[in-house]
Length: 269
Image (tube, rainbow, N blue to C red; front, side):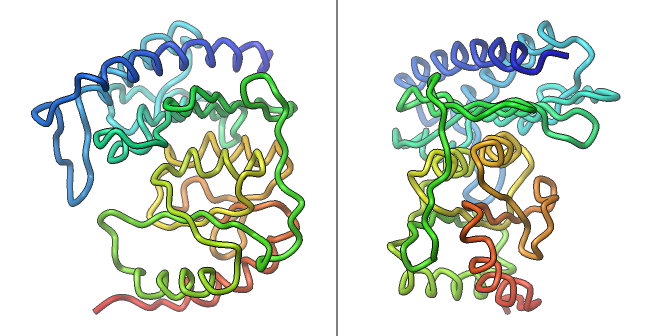
Protein backbone atom coordinates (compact mmCIF):
# COMPACT_ATOMS: atom_id res chain seq x y z
CA UNK A 1 0.00 0.00 0.00
CA UNK A 2 1.22 3.50 -0.86
CA UNK A 3 0.49 5.36 2.37
CA UNK A 4 1.56 8.73 0.95
CA UNK A 5 -0.87 8.59 -1.96
CA UNK A 6 -3.70 7.41 0.28
CA UNK A 7 -2.96 10.17 2.80
CA UNK A 8 -2.97 12.93 0.18
CA UNK A 9 -6.19 11.64 -1.32
CA UNK A 10 -7.76 11.58 2.14
CA UNK A 11 -6.53 15.15 2.75
CA UNK A 12 -8.50 16.33 -0.28
CA UNK A 13 -11.64 14.63 1.05
CA UNK A 14 -11.21 16.10 4.51
CA UNK A 15 -10.65 19.64 3.23
CA UNK A 16 -13.83 19.37 1.16
CA UNK A 17 -15.76 18.28 4.24
CA UNK A 18 -14.11 21.12 6.16
CA UNK A 19 -15.47 23.57 3.62
CA UNK A 20 -18.94 22.12 4.24
CA UNK A 21 -18.50 22.56 8.00
CA UNK A 22 -17.26 26.13 7.58
CA UNK A 23 -20.18 27.12 5.36
CA UNK A 24 -22.85 25.30 7.34
CA UNK A 25 -21.55 26.73 10.59
CA UNK A 26 -22.45 30.24 9.48
CA UNK A 27 -26.13 29.30 9.68
CA UNK A 28 -25.99 27.11 12.79
CA UNK A 29 -28.94 27.62 15.14
CA UNK A 30 -29.48 26.35 18.67
CA UNK A 31 -32.24 23.98 17.57
CA UNK A 32 -29.57 22.08 15.58
CA UNK A 33 -27.61 21.35 18.75
CA UNK A 34 -28.17 18.24 20.86
CA UNK A 35 -26.80 17.45 24.31
CA UNK A 36 -25.27 13.98 24.60
CA UNK A 37 -24.25 14.46 28.23
CA UNK A 38 -22.99 17.10 30.62
CA UNK A 39 -21.26 19.75 28.48
CA UNK A 40 -21.13 17.21 25.62
CA UNK A 41 -22.71 18.60 22.47
CA UNK A 42 -23.31 17.42 18.93
CA UNK A 43 -24.79 19.30 15.99
CA UNK A 44 -26.44 18.23 12.77
CA UNK A 45 -23.27 19.50 11.13
CA UNK A 46 -21.10 17.02 13.10
CA UNK A 47 -23.31 14.19 11.88
CA UNK A 48 -23.43 15.51 8.31
CA UNK A 49 -19.64 15.88 8.22
CA UNK A 50 -19.11 12.37 9.53
CA UNK A 51 -21.50 10.87 6.97
CA UNK A 52 -19.61 12.65 4.19
CA UNK A 53 -16.30 11.38 5.53
CA UNK A 54 -17.54 7.81 5.88
CA UNK A 55 -18.97 7.78 2.34
CA UNK A 56 -15.87 9.21 0.67
CA UNK A 57 -13.34 7.22 2.70
CA UNK A 58 -15.30 4.02 2.01
CA UNK A 59 -14.84 4.65 -1.70
CA UNK A 60 -11.15 5.36 -1.17
CA UNK A 61 -10.48 2.18 0.86
CA UNK A 62 -13.50 -0.17 0.63
CA UNK A 63 -12.12 -2.80 3.00
CA UNK A 64 -11.71 -0.35 5.88
CA UNK A 65 -14.07 0.01 8.81
CA UNK A 66 -14.66 2.93 11.14
CA UNK A 67 -14.22 4.00 14.72
CA UNK A 68 -16.25 7.20 14.53
CA UNK A 69 -17.42 9.49 17.31
CA UNK A 70 -20.99 9.90 16.07
CA UNK A 71 -21.28 6.24 15.02
CA UNK A 72 -22.75 6.99 11.61
CA UNK A 73 -20.99 3.76 10.61
CA UNK A 74 -20.36 0.83 12.94
CA UNK A 75 -18.58 -1.26 10.31
CA UNK A 76 -15.28 -2.70 11.55
CA UNK A 77 -12.50 -3.72 9.20
CA UNK A 78 -10.44 -6.86 9.71
CA UNK A 79 -7.21 -4.95 9.09
CA UNK A 80 -7.95 -1.28 8.39
CA UNK A 81 -10.08 1.16 10.38
CA UNK A 82 -10.49 4.91 10.01
CA UNK A 83 -10.67 6.71 13.38
CA UNK A 84 -12.80 9.83 12.92
CA UNK A 85 -13.83 12.92 14.84
CA UNK A 86 -15.89 15.05 12.43
CA UNK A 87 -15.53 18.17 14.58
CA UNK A 88 -13.05 18.05 17.44
CA UNK A 89 -13.90 21.12 19.47
CA UNK A 90 -17.67 21.14 18.98
CA UNK A 91 -18.21 23.51 21.92
CA UNK A 92 -15.84 26.00 20.28
CA UNK A 93 -17.61 25.47 16.97
CA UNK A 94 -21.11 26.19 18.25
CA UNK A 95 -19.85 29.40 19.84
CA UNK A 96 -17.96 30.49 16.73
CA UNK A 97 -14.55 30.09 18.36
CA UNK A 98 -11.34 28.53 17.02
CA UNK A 99 -9.90 26.01 17.05
CA UNK A 100 -12.14 23.25 15.78
CA UNK A 101 -10.85 20.51 13.54
CA UNK A 102 -11.59 17.36 11.60
CA UNK A 103 -9.43 14.51 12.88
CA UNK A 104 -8.94 11.37 10.79
CA UNK A 105 -6.43 8.56 11.34
CA UNK A 106 -6.02 5.22 9.63
CA UNK A 107 -5.15 2.24 11.78
CA UNK A 108 -3.70 -0.91 10.21
CA UNK A 109 -4.10 -3.73 12.71
CA UNK A 110 -2.81 -2.00 15.86
CA UNK A 111 -0.57 0.54 14.11
CA UNK A 112 -1.42 4.09 13.09
CA UNK A 113 -0.32 4.58 9.49
CA UNK A 114 -1.99 7.88 8.48
CA UNK A 115 -2.96 10.96 10.45
CA UNK A 116 -4.76 14.09 9.23
CA UNK A 117 -5.96 17.06 11.29
CA UNK A 118 -7.69 19.87 9.40
CA UNK A 119 -8.11 22.96 11.57
CA UNK A 120 -11.07 24.56 9.86
CA UNK A 121 -10.96 28.16 11.03
CA UNK A 122 -7.31 28.69 9.99
CA UNK A 123 -7.52 26.44 6.91
CA UNK A 124 -4.51 24.45 8.13
CA UNK A 125 -4.12 20.80 7.20
CA UNK A 126 -1.61 18.80 9.26
CA UNK A 127 -0.84 15.34 7.90
CA UNK A 128 1.57 12.43 7.84
CA UNK A 129 1.85 8.79 6.83
CA UNK A 130 3.86 5.76 7.90
CA UNK A 131 7.49 6.24 6.92
CA UNK A 132 6.96 9.92 6.07
CA UNK A 133 7.54 13.34 7.59
CA UNK A 134 4.81 15.55 9.00
CA UNK A 135 3.47 18.55 7.12
CA UNK A 136 1.19 21.54 7.42
CA UNK A 137 -0.15 22.87 4.13
CA UNK A 138 2.73 21.27 2.20
CA UNK A 139 5.45 22.59 4.54
CA UNK A 140 7.41 20.14 6.68
CA UNK A 141 6.94 20.66 10.41
CA UNK A 142 8.97 19.68 13.45
CA UNK A 143 8.65 19.89 17.21
CA UNK A 144 10.46 22.58 19.17
CA UNK A 145 13.89 22.14 20.71
CA UNK A 146 12.96 23.55 24.13
CA UNK A 147 15.01 21.73 26.75
CA UNK A 148 13.21 22.27 30.08
CA UNK A 149 9.68 22.77 31.40
CA UNK A 150 10.48 26.23 32.77
CA UNK A 151 11.05 27.38 29.17
CA UNK A 152 8.02 25.55 27.75
CA UNK A 153 4.54 26.63 26.71
CA UNK A 154 2.15 23.86 27.72
CA UNK A 155 -1.36 23.07 26.49
CA UNK A 156 -3.92 21.12 28.46
CA UNK A 157 -7.62 20.32 28.35
CA UNK A 158 -10.43 19.84 30.84
CA UNK A 159 -12.76 16.85 30.97
CA UNK A 160 -16.39 17.74 30.32
CA UNK A 161 -17.99 15.00 32.39
CA UNK A 162 -15.33 12.85 34.08
CA UNK A 163 -14.24 14.69 37.21
CA UNK A 164 -12.94 11.61 39.06
CA UNK A 165 -9.32 12.78 38.84
CA UNK A 166 -9.91 16.52 38.76
CA UNK A 167 -8.42 17.34 42.15
CA UNK A 168 -5.14 15.68 41.19
CA UNK A 169 -5.29 17.27 37.74
CA UNK A 170 -5.63 20.72 39.28
CA UNK A 171 -2.37 20.09 41.14
CA UNK A 172 -0.55 19.53 37.85
CA UNK A 173 -2.08 22.69 36.42
CA UNK A 174 -1.01 24.66 39.47
CA UNK A 175 2.56 23.42 39.02
CA UNK A 176 2.76 24.32 35.34
CA UNK A 177 1.16 27.74 35.84
CA UNK A 178 3.98 28.56 38.25
CA UNK A 179 6.89 26.75 36.57
CA UNK A 180 6.53 27.19 32.79
CA UNK A 181 6.06 29.92 30.20
CA UNK A 182 2.33 29.38 30.57
CA UNK A 183 -0.60 27.00 30.43
CA UNK A 184 -3.20 27.14 27.65
CA UNK A 185 -6.56 25.44 27.09
CA UNK A 186 -7.64 25.61 23.44
CA UNK A 187 -10.52 23.11 23.42
CA UNK A 188 -9.46 20.73 20.63
CA UNK A 189 -7.06 17.92 21.48
CA UNK A 190 -6.40 17.13 17.82
CA UNK A 191 -5.33 20.73 17.25
CA UNK A 192 -3.31 20.75 20.47
CA UNK A 193 -1.25 17.79 19.29
CA UNK A 194 -0.74 19.40 15.89
CA UNK A 195 0.45 22.62 17.49
CA UNK A 196 3.02 20.70 19.52
CA UNK A 197 4.04 18.92 16.31
CA UNK A 198 4.78 22.21 14.57
CA UNK A 199 6.50 23.82 17.56
CA UNK A 200 3.87 26.40 18.49
CA UNK A 201 3.67 24.74 21.89
CA UNK A 202 6.09 22.38 23.58
CA UNK A 203 3.79 19.91 25.34
CA UNK A 204 0.15 18.87 25.70
CA UNK A 205 -1.43 16.61 28.31
CA UNK A 206 -4.97 15.65 29.28
CA UNK A 207 -7.11 12.82 30.61
CA UNK A 208 -10.62 11.53 29.71
CA UNK A 209 -9.70 11.48 26.02
CA UNK A 210 -11.22 9.32 23.29
CA UNK A 211 -9.31 7.60 20.45
CA UNK A 212 -10.79 9.94 17.84
CA UNK A 213 -9.49 12.93 19.83
CA UNK A 214 -5.86 11.88 19.65
CA UNK A 215 -5.15 9.18 17.03
CA UNK A 216 -4.39 11.48 14.09
CA UNK A 217 -2.50 14.02 16.15
CA UNK A 218 -0.42 11.33 17.82
CA UNK A 219 1.14 10.04 14.61
CA UNK A 220 1.57 13.58 13.25
CA UNK A 221 3.47 14.50 16.41
CA UNK A 222 5.60 11.36 16.36
CA UNK A 223 6.60 11.84 12.72
CA UNK A 224 7.45 15.46 13.55
CA UNK A 225 10.02 14.24 16.07
CA UNK A 226 7.87 14.26 19.21
CA UNK A 227 6.78 11.64 21.68
CA UNK A 228 3.45 10.50 23.10
CA UNK A 229 2.78 8.41 26.18
CA UNK A 230 0.20 7.80 28.86
CA UNK A 231 0.65 8.91 32.46
CA UNK A 232 2.64 5.75 33.19
CA UNK A 233 5.08 6.40 30.36
CA UNK A 234 3.65 3.72 28.07
CA UNK A 235 3.65 4.73 24.40
CA UNK A 236 0.37 2.89 23.78
CA UNK A 237 -1.79 5.89 24.63
CA UNK A 238 -4.46 6.23 21.90
CA UNK A 239 -6.96 3.98 23.67
CA UNK A 240 -5.79 4.61 27.25
CA UNK A 241 -7.83 7.77 27.79
CA UNK A 242 -4.82 9.80 28.94
CA UNK A 243 -1.91 11.37 27.14
CA UNK A 244 1.30 13.32 27.55
CA UNK A 245 2.84 14.64 24.34
CA UNK A 246 5.97 16.72 23.88
CA UNK A 247 9.28 17.10 22.16
CA UNK A 248 11.64 14.39 23.32
CA UNK A 249 13.67 16.76 25.49
CA UNK A 250 10.79 17.27 27.92
CA UNK A 251 9.65 13.66 28.27
CA UNK A 252 11.46 12.70 31.45
CA UNK A 253 10.72 15.96 33.27
CA UNK A 254 7.02 16.00 32.33
CA UNK A 255 6.59 12.38 33.33
CA UNK A 256 8.34 13.00 36.66
CA UNK A 257 5.87 15.81 37.41
CA UNK A 258 2.62 14.32 36.09
CA UNK A 259 2.98 10.61 36.86
CA UNK A 260 3.13 10.68 40.68
CA UNK A 261 0.25 13.15 40.89
CA UNK A 262 -2.14 11.62 38.35
CA UNK A 263 -1.40 8.01 39.32
CA UNK A 264 -1.99 8.67 43.01
CA UNK A 265 -5.43 6.99 42.80
CA UNK A 266 -6.96 10.15 44.23
CA UNK A 267 -10.68 10.44 43.52
CA UNK A 268 -12.89 13.43 44.19
CA UNK A 269 -15.34 13.05 47.06
